[in-house]
Length: 356
Image (cartoon, rainbow, N blue to C red; front, side):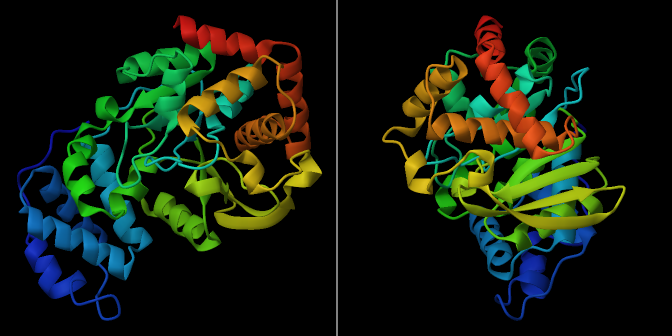
C-alpha cells in the first residue's frame, strides 16, 4: 500500500461537479481515468466537504459509472489503501456485496469450506455492518461459527495456506475505505464504493467469483478488470446471485465467464435443477440470517442436513471449484463437493478454521 498522495491535479470535486458529472443523469459527461483517480485521491485525503462529497457520490450514481471511471477508482484504492497479503496457494477471490443479505441464508461460507476440502483454496472478504443495508455478511456467519475474523492481512493469508479457506477483514486490509464508513452511512444509498470494494482482492488472487442482478453489470465489471492497471485477474466467473450476493439464484439463471486468454465475456444459461438444486428462492429464506446461516452451514458440513440447503451449498462449492479450473465442468465439481461432505473432509476444514 502506498501512502495517500497530497499532490493533486486540476480537478477538485467541485470542478468535476460543475464541468463534468453534475449536470444531471441525461446530460452529465463521463470522467477520464485520470479524473476518477484524482477524485478518489482527494476523497481519501479528506479534502472535500461533506456536502460536496455527498453531491459527487449522488452525481456518479445518477449518471452511472463507466468501466473507465470504476477502474480509476479501483486503481487508487489498490495503490493507496489495500494492504495485500498473498498466500502461497492461489485462491479464488470471492467478493460479495459488503452490505450483506437480509432474507435468504448466506451460503458462501459453507460453499467455500467445501471447495477448500476438495482442494480449491478460497478467500472471502467483508466488513462489519457496511452501508447501506448493514446486513449479514461473511464476517457475521464466521463469527457465529466460532471462527476468528478480526485478523490482520498476513494472518488471513496464513489461514488460507493452513486450512484452504481464509477471511480478510476490511478495516484491517482496506483502511481508507473503512474510514469512509460514517459518510457512506449518512448517504443512505449505495455509491461506487460498494462496487469497487468487492474487487479489492487483498489476496492478489488470480481468479474472481462474483454475482450480478443483470448481465450488463457483469460486462461492466469485466471491463473494469480489463481497464484497471492494478487488478491482475486472469479469469472471472459471475452468476445471478441472491440479494446481490455470491449465492447462485435457484431456477433459470445466467452465468458469465471471462478469461484473459480469450479476452471476451461468454454468457450462458443453466437450470439449477439440473445440478440437484431443485427449489425456489423462497425455499432458502430464513428468519435470522446470521444465526440460521451458521446453523445450516455447520449441519450441512457435518452431513447432518440434506435437502435444499445442502444442495445449494454443494452447487455453490462446485462453482468455486470450476472457477479455478480445477475441474472441467460443473458436474465434476458437484461430484467432488458432495464427496468431501460425505467423507467428513468439509467438516474437518471447519474444525481447522475454529482452531486457527
